[in-house]
Amino acid sequence: MKTLKHKETGSIRRVENKEADFLTSGKNPIWGFVPKTEWKSNPKTNVVETPQGEEAPKRTKASKKNDEKKNRKNN
Image 1 (spheres, rainbow, N blue to C red):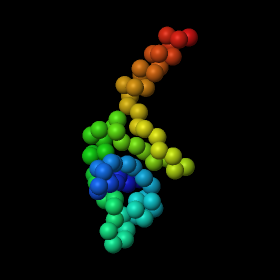
Image 2 (cartoon, rainbow, N blue to C red):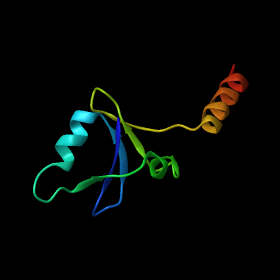
Image 3 (cartoon, rainbow, N blue to C red):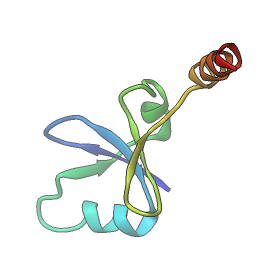
Image 4 (cartoon, helix red, strand yellow):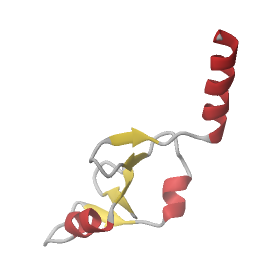
């Protein structure tokens, strides 16, 4: 997986290697490679590209724990 940043909007996303190569090729590519640490710096606004091509928000450990607590209270 590679981390890409959109040059105009500044959005960051993780995609598979083949798609990353395609998006960064050409005369004036809109996407550019960035370090993974930049993607990790703000996980709430970043997305992970799933193999099926659907975007899913990255969940933090804290949000998973909160969801588990809510489910326990409801049961």
